[in-house]
Amino acid sequence: MKTVDLLSIAFRTVKSNKLRTGITVTIIALGITALIGIITAIDAMNQSLTESFSTMGANSFSIHYRDQEIHIGGGRQVKKTSRDALKEKKSNSNKIITYQEAKLFKERYSFPALVSISITGPQSVVVNNEKVKTNPNISMTGVDENYLQQSGYTLSEGRNFNKIDVQSGRSICILGNSVAQKLYGDNIQRAIDKIINVAGIKYRVIGILKDKGSSAFLNADNIVLTSYNNIRRLFSTEGTTYNIGVMVNDIKDMDAAISEAKGTFRPIRKVAIDEENNFYIDKSDSIAEVFMSSLGAITTAAAFIGLITLIGAAIGLMNIMLVAVNERTREIGLIKAIGGTKKSIRTQFLFESVLISLIGALFGIILGVLVGNIVGLFLHTGVVVPWGWVVLGIIVCSAVGLFAGLYPAIKAARLDPIVALRYE
Image (cartoon, rainbow, N blue to C red; front, side, top):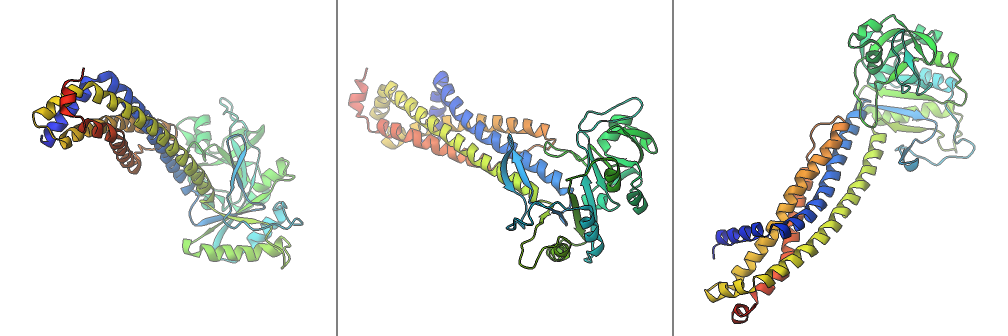
């Protein structure tokens, strides 16, 4: 028989056993759906993370008093983020960066770079005007005149802080785009020079930030910025560390800038020559890399789940093909009696097995991509199709079909035509 004839017979046979084929296709499709769906969702998360952290600038780094840690799922520690993690001396560990230390660093740092100082203010605060108030999900941050540029923010309306604003600590603020829209609708420019309440304290609005975008991991627009001296003056900052951000002019100068920062900050932090650093330096993309590496573990788990499901599907498909051989014993005997070869019979059963497996793969891939992109909709990402995994899924399902159909095909090809014709 020709290959086209064998494919036609295999297709008609698969089509005629709808229930049996449907069950096997469903099992295979579930395994591929689980695999492709999770991979697609992870790709969407990676895209969202990349967009979130790319706005922070690849040519910037920050200085913290201790290595930052990422917690996922009920506070489980995943990994420290610093690429510069060093051993800590007990005498120097967990010593916060004070206002004086941050200020001295900014004054002494001689490398051609932009230095900003910031401090975390009250979190989960309510912002309101005379008519509207926000949900209690707004973050306050005390900053200086360099913070917007160093953090990748751009003004949509109004002006930035100046040195006098920072030194005086007067009650003025810059609103994140989401906050301005909540309070003043689409005409956000109306917010300029208005008096609003932030955490129960009156502030005059001097600027509004452009929409920086948000993701499931980071909302950069639900913020209110004021000067760090305002935070010091109106809120308790005891035990709160200052953050130092540095943005170099050229990413090629990053390593040199980091080395200069260490040399500048060690004397300020009173680190002896024989002691390790009691501060840590993070590049802007280090947190994103930690998340992505964690998602890589989920990818491995998804592949394992899909593999287990496909093994189960292969066993089920083999059993179905063995049943098909028994049911079609007389048909096989008739084909042999009229000149059918062992090769053609073996090929026909292999085609049937692979065809069933590939139908399952097709449905699984379509469902998996749809499920994964539903997650992408919540993350505000574009359509994601993991083509590499799609191709791998097709290859694996073809292999599953060949493996599951090989023994039944060989059994069918070895049947004695006389015995097969007498089979009842």
